[in-house]
Length: 110
Image (tube, rainbow, N blue to C red):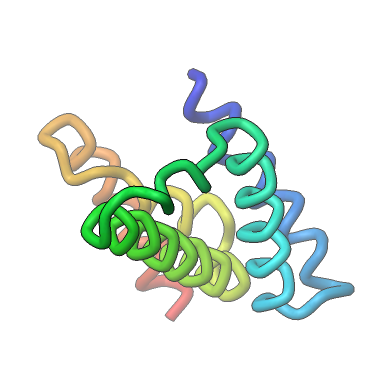
């Protein structure tokens, strides 16, 4: 339940913003606002004073999360939100039963 609360409202708002802001602009806004919240909550600059390995892991995580969010926002700009959201389901045994219908939806929209 908690995943649904956070998983759909923000992308739904993003879809509404696509009419006024380019997809990459919305993705940038999402990444920047999440970075501000994360910085206020966790104070990550303390990690930057650690060793080179810790610093590179921290920065790599940020780049990977930014790329993931950008890809997701590019997907919801082209596909219905429910189809793009369903594609983010992990490939667990329980989730595989839910993945079949979204594949049909993706093929139907191709």
